[in-house]
Image (tube, rainbow, N blue to C red; front, side):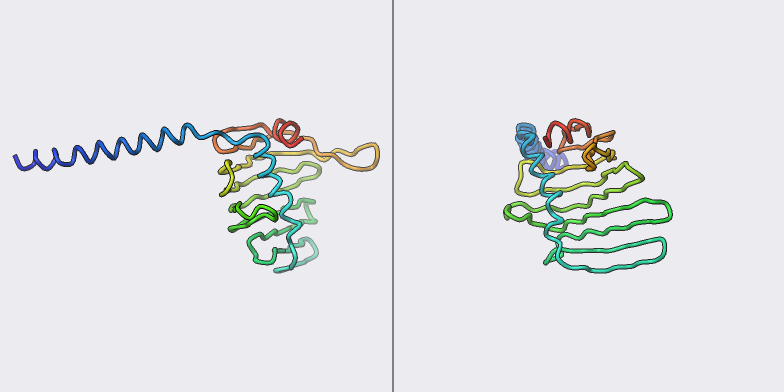
Amino acid sequence: MQAYQTHSRDLPRALLTLALAASVLALASCAKPASDAELAQAYGFYVEAPQTLDHVLSTANSELLVRESIANADESYVRTTEINQADKTSKITAVFKDYRPEGASSVTINGEVTLTSLGRVFSINGSLAYKGLNLRSLVFKNASLEQMPESDGGFSFLPVGGSIQADKRVIGAEEFFTEILK
């Protein structure tokens, strides 16, 4: 009899917990996905961050490898560049730790993104988490661009594969780089 009474008291608590969980899930499912403009803004913060770099943290050079780490003033953004002259590859790793983009003090970025190159193809992998935006995360999954020479001597980059996941929305590299970032 005592076991029945204990379980009967726990039942209302369990139902309340279940109802609260269902409410949270319902609210989350009603959340509006980030617009294309918000995706472009979030990516823009990543692209503009190198402008804040102002001091060298470390350098290491050898005959075949060049490595340098540069940071912004508070070291919330650190970019490390590695160039392997033997196999003609390069890797740029951007690390964000509570980084606040210039002109957007209410936005905070955390995460790590690596850009690797092999010849003319550049691939982006990694993830960025955002606070202060409708968008919560951007995940780059081998989003690749090929550097193409132009007739004026300049270069353009054409998407050749991979994807970007913006929260739950998966976007092909071509759509992301040609339509969303136009």
